[in-house]
Image 1 (tube, rainbow, N blue to C red):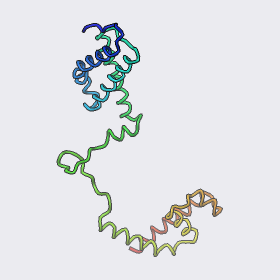
Image 2: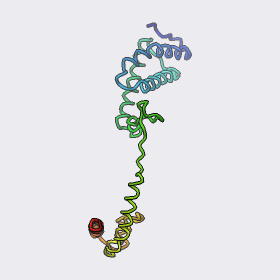
Image 3: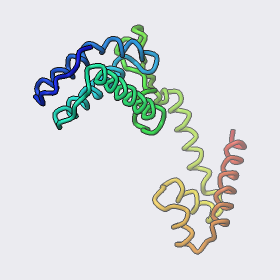
Image 4: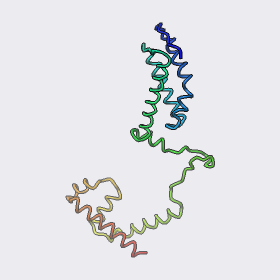
Length: 192
């Protein structure tokens, strides 16, 4: 490798970084192909190259093209490590994106077909029948049990606020709610 010019011309130094980056690109991408996917490696390589161009534009110099090539590889590997840390959990967004499957209109292309998690008609009918039965059985609960169940179903007031408003302890709230659910379960089973 030839030696970089010491003339101080920024355009020549940037050109030299570009030439070395272009010459070493395929070699470094192949050498580190086991670390990341190809597109991620290319992103890391681009980041490393841009860092070196910025360094040269700010007046930084290298002893020669061999030194430049080694610094480029060092920065490239550093970007790879950063990317792997982001994927492995330092960035929850990157971890989620890494585990996501691509979408496709045609699942036979080897990509993900989205499942419809909404209940089917039969399931909806069963749920509606159970709700009707619960509505009919709620009057059989004690007044405290009805109060707690209605509070839980509406979700407008949390347990702490409910206890404060009604002067109950947290233990009483928990026990009344537990007994109400148990009583409803027993009444539903007896009805069937």
